[in-house]
Length: 187
Image (cartoon, rainbow, N blue to C red; front, side, top):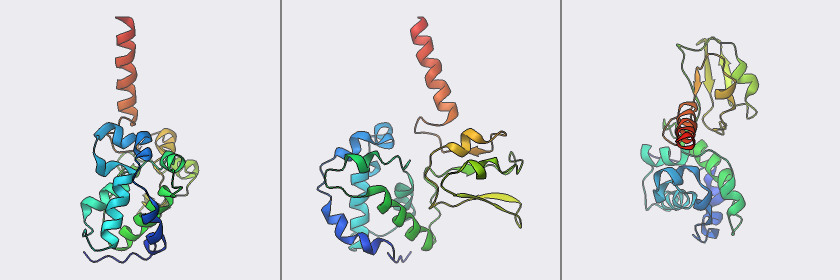
């Protein structure tokens, strides 16, 4: 799939500023769960650099990696080269969306069968990533604006808003983690 890097072009020089030190991945939730270099901010920057310079073709898999970020900005704070990693990822996500990629990553979702259309998630979203589409009668999530913070998930009274499981941060996974901890304490 051909891809224009309209937003990413402004970051071309910043991709070279990253010194590949690895400080960013020490704080990355996703890397701590998966252990894959491609899940680290450094790994994602290397992929973006490769795509922009023609060494790597954009694909659904690379798009998915870029969208797998909780936008906690701990990599930004840890970056000794002061690369604005999460801003760079936001622009990359927008370019992937413009190119027609369907990646969801850690972006929040809405189960339309559970959703009561109360719009509490819209009011709770401080990133303005959720809107009500009256024509479709559904809550729509802007994949670029969503910061994967989980506020919509916590605010949704019907449990329709949810985040991808597998990174230890969903309500189900957190409950299980607390349960295992408490069982270990009582033993």
